[in-house]
Structures are given as structure tokens and as C-alpha cells.
Image (cartoon, rainbow, N blue to C red; front, side, top):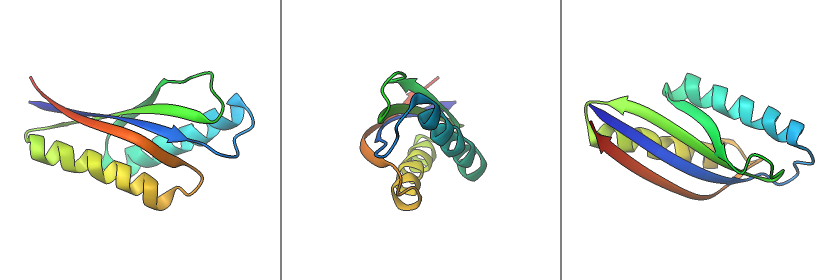
Length: 96
């Protein structure tokens, strides 16, 4: 079994409150789940209004497939969410 993980650091310009940030991230997480069948959650920078660290995970039988799914998630955010900027991301596959 392969577990693919990705930590994505996001810049959220225009966000003016934690409530607005959480609403924005809740919608993003729901879209990622529907589109890519991945698990996602905010994993760091909880109290910073205009930044977030998002953790995304997928399970697969192939490290190549898991990596491709996570790379597609990052590209999808960059292409479809102009309200947020991907600052950095890191993909890792764990063999269990």
C-alpha cells in the first residue's frame, strides 16, 4: 500500500478574518474531495489570516499514481482558484 502526502503552503490575499479564511478553505477542501477523492485538512498556520498550510493525502497501489494525483491537485488549485496562491508544496510517498 502506498500513501501519498502533500503539504501545500497557500497565500490567501484579500482574507480579512479567520472566519473568512476557514470558509474559503472549507470550500476548497470540499472541491478537492469531490474532484480527486483525496483527504485534505488545514495542518498549520491556523491563526494566520492570509496564509495556510494544507495537508492532502491519497492511498494507491502505485507511488507514481499517488504522486500524479497530488501533483494534479496542486495544478488544479493554481489553475482554478485565483483567490489563492500556491507558495510552495512538497509531495512524499510512503510505502506501508
